[in-house]
Image 1: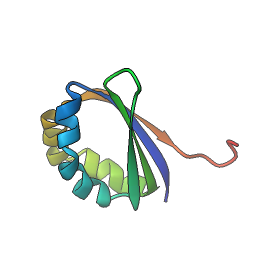
Image 2: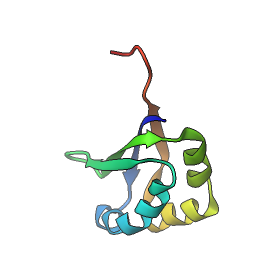
Image 3: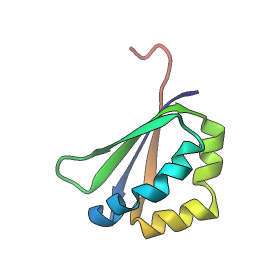
Image 4: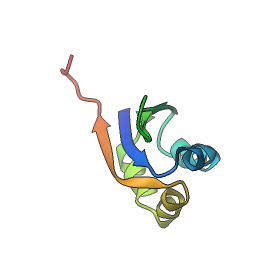
Length: 89
């Protein structure tokens, strides 16, 4: 398990923020905890997932349920995914 950062634009920040109750059950399936950060000027967010299981994350985020939730929450593709690496510090 590792730390993963997912970054993407959102079409409507208010709508996206209201979707948090939908994200939590999905994110709980593949990470121990997560924090959400908003870009200071743009409608862009980063979600830092601690203790992430990459294989499960791919399954959850690739599901039809996730696709529907992304549309409802105005997620704008692409979603950039960054994975913690050893020796990078």
